[in-house]
Amino acid sequence: EAGVTQFPSHSVIEKGQTVTLRCDPISGHDNLYWYRRVMGKEIKFLLHFVKESKQDESGMPNNRFLAERTGGTYSTLKVQPAELEDSGVYFCASTPQGATGTQYFGPGTRLLVL
Amino acid sequence: AQRVTQPEKLLSVFKGAPVELKCNYSYSGSPELFWYVQYSRQRLQLLLRHISRESIKGFTADLNKGETSFHLKKPFAQEEDSAMYYCALRADKLIFGTGTRLQVFP
Image (cartoon, rainbow over all chains, first blue to last red; front, side):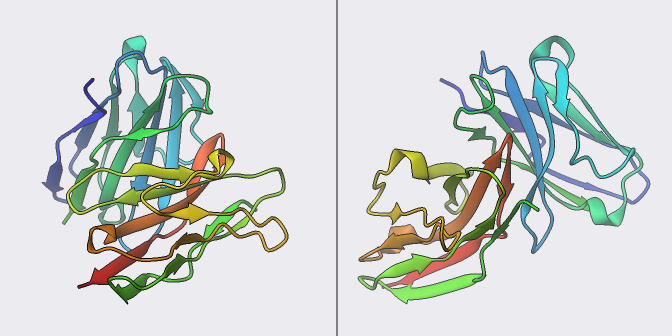
């Protein structure tokens, strides 16, 4: 069974540009989560999808971040325009049932904004 | 406020020494706690969860509600235990601590 995949693995962009991160959860997993780890800080929750619906987006930093999950399969997280403080590692995780199952993490996308 | 605290950024021990990675939490309800591990060049993965009360790779963790702690312990560290360890609390989403890097020297 393929695990959670994320694309790209790394992205280096300039301040003001746009970047789109993609997450493909494990097939059949309804729950999809985005997290972010900024250098030296904890891994912080961004948002939670149940199928295509946003269940909780309380962790989204501001309106420069837009997450979508059309069709309830893969998800994208777009940052527009990117700022220096957006640099970090963005993780995606999925679970098969409810919000109580073990979360399976993707490898992360390392974003560097210059 | 819901919070997880891992006071040590780095813990270095020699092979065969006991290890204890500290984790304290703040949560008003009944907590569900986890330890996640990230080995070099690998993805974050679940190590153990308190409700399972199991030992994985020789690691154990006991939930102490009185001290609001969930410390991770192993009596004899191995070199392959070197990794980043994250304590996490579930409140729908996962709330992580800042992580502790464990280095086990030969």
